[in-house]
Structures are given as structure tokens and as C-alpha cells.
Figure 1 (tube, rainbow, N blue to C red):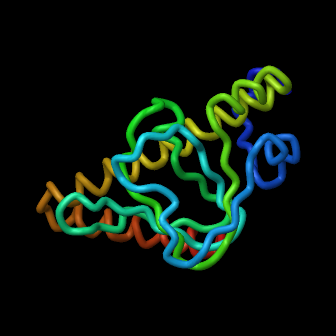
Figure 2: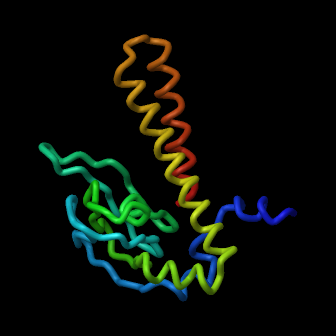
Length: 166
């Protein structure tokens, strides 16, 4: 396998001891807010156990995603070092790993190939989320019956895959 092909092989964050060692670990409690929408932070989080919800609290609260073991959150602010675009709350007690941008730079200095694989995996996750958001917006904006049936079937299929992962 060529080196550039290795870079695009996805990382299973919870199976990479070198990545886990670079992270901080934190136990979480039910209803604990990990971070609020609008907060300034650039840490990336990986769920080791428990369940979490991502929500948008502008106006009426809207749940954007339900996350479980192995899922990642905080990646947008991690890459952009900015304001949190949503809030994340613990639903069932668990544990999260977090890594700051500074720690990730040190991780990159020690394990550059693995750091590139982590970054490529995160980019793939962001791409998948953007694709899902585009499809959802398309469903909401297109009133054609055929388009709506197609998108509903696609969303059901994604839900089944997500449930099997748990």
C-alpha cells in the first residue's frame, strides 16, 4: 500500500493507543453540559462511553444529532479555533476523551503519519455530515413527492446503519 493511500485509511480513535495517550479523559454525568453554543474553545472530543446530544439553542431548542461510543464532536471549532456552533449535553453517564490543538500539534510532532490519518478521518466525517445536511435541506426545500420518498428512504437506511453501530 502506498504511503498516500495509508493516509486516507480511516482511524478508529478508540483503538489507537498513541492517540488515546495524547488525550485527556473525563467522566461525564447525566444532563452535564460539555460545552454551550457560543462558547470559545478548540478542543476535539471522542466519546469513549455514554450518549450525548448536539443541540442548537437559538430560538426553540433543536436536537441536531445523537452521539454514542466512537463518535466525535467539536471538530468544527477544533479546525477553525472558534466559537462553538452548537451545545453538547450528556444524556447517559459516560466518558469522553479530549485533545486540544496544542496537544494535537505535539501529537503530530511525535506521530506525523498517524496525525495525518486522524485529520483525514475527521475531514471524512465532516464531509459525511455536510452531505447529510445538504440532503436534509434538499428534502425540506423540494416539495416533489418522488424526492421526498427518496430522501425518507435514505434517512431510514442511515438510521438503521447508525443503530447497528451501537
